[in-house]
Length: 295
Image 1 (cartoon, rainbow, N blue to C red):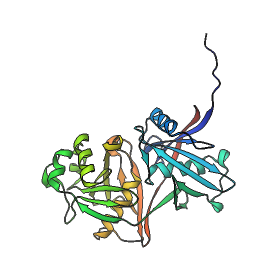
Image 2: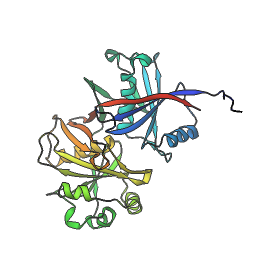
Image 3: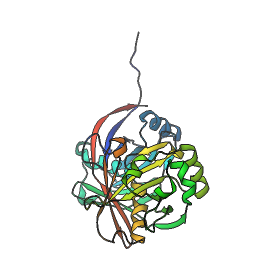
């Protein structure tokens, strides 16, 4: 005989982030909580959803504050502001019935313990990242085997593989053309070893195209935290924007677009803008599911 179990429940959403189309972009689960959960429960729920990241939001009307924590399925807590935060805030804005949010009194956003600035333009949100810091280059020869590429495939004009950081350090890898980008295959073990050796998290392979609408195309790999390939990566788009502006490929105070996710059939568009005091990374999101999670 099957009996009904009495158990606590939480509301959840699944969003596609950095897209305005359902079933494109980067999938994100967003779980609504009324209080902090245990660390083990955060990790168990994130593993259950299985998306590259799951965000947990706790909204206080009294203080008008949204607190966000994000975890990967392997239990790694994300500190960077990317699709994990963009989608979490979009859930707050898109579900008017639950949150009744008012853009004229936009909530303070706290990612783990840090206050994050966010701007709203129409349906798009912009995450404010700190100014990019250009760190150390990584030898091309060490990357060839890790990405299944030849040495001449890596690099573009004066650009070479370089670690760049905003909130998180990622390795920016310029590639010769779109064909090279498409054929790139990551070796999880080798990339993880290089990440430890050169002190970065993920690898952002990119090409500069001739297209005016979308001048940059990219792919992101971060096997060290369980992400084989990511359809859209806001925490890497910010460092890339700073890197390209540093070398004169993009200008300050202008919007540019990065296309990502094509190799996964989950096309995404990330919008970037470098400003004097930091970098804005933005885009759309759409809710595709909502329901009840039992804990």
